Amino acid sequence: MFPGSLRLTSFPATATEGSLFTLVCTSSRTTVPQRTWSRETVDVLATQYSNTSCDTVVLNSGVFDTYLGERVEPPTCDMLRHNVTLRINSSIDDGTEWWCKDTNGTSNTLTIGEWILSGTVHSPVDNGIV
Image (cartoon, rainbow, N blue to C red; front, side, top):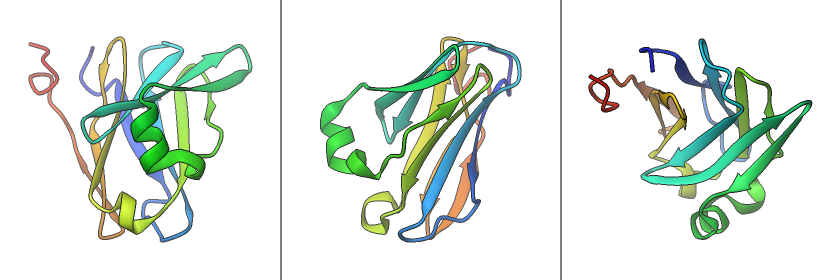
């Protein structure tokens, strides 16, 4: 993967208790139709773009059911951008780290904490790419 080809951002930038919060995984170079979404150290779900639809595939039902469950809205996506929206619950979401990945690499990490989203950009070495 080229550095910076996957980028994770959010809308809005500030998470608010009980409000919808969208994680946006954008690719600047690849057209891979599937993105994997990780919460903490676990690959929780994938979003799959197919023609004009976007589907969710639960990868870890234990984590999904415990921490996300009914708070996740149906995803939206196209070949370059995949969105996952959840309703914020501070007792579950505060301090959690999120990232997205595809077959070409991994995005930066975003942390939901103190209701201000902070981010860490991984270098190619951090992603295991030399």
